[in-house]
Length: 134
Image 1: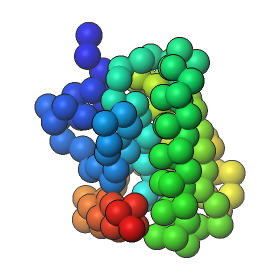
Image 2 (image 1 turned 90 degrees about the vertical axis):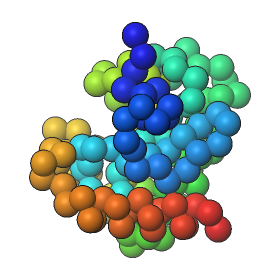
Image 3 (image 1 turned 135 degrees about the vertical axis):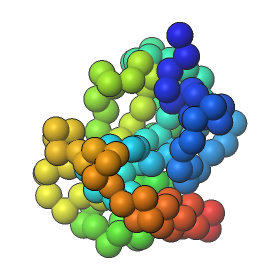
């Protein structure tokens, strides 16, 4: 069965993309710990990050680092958080988010899609896309 991330990548369901190349996509999560919370996902659907080809895993991390730098720039956060959880969707992904403390490292602190402001989500995606395009 196709994962929800593959459906987003293939355009079957909407996503707020901030980056995409032939191997890796990055888009905002619909359940962020903070505005700008981005998922870095290999295009190839592989459930566990430990099963990814090492070169593809390295590429995912390279993109995650770029996203992290853009997050710090755009949101003025002290750091960019990085987290691998992977139980909610069977498609390897890295969470990258603005972090000024440890609260973002608990995914029990996420906003529901109903609690997010669509205009703020769109603005976050636009600003991150612009920063990553530099």
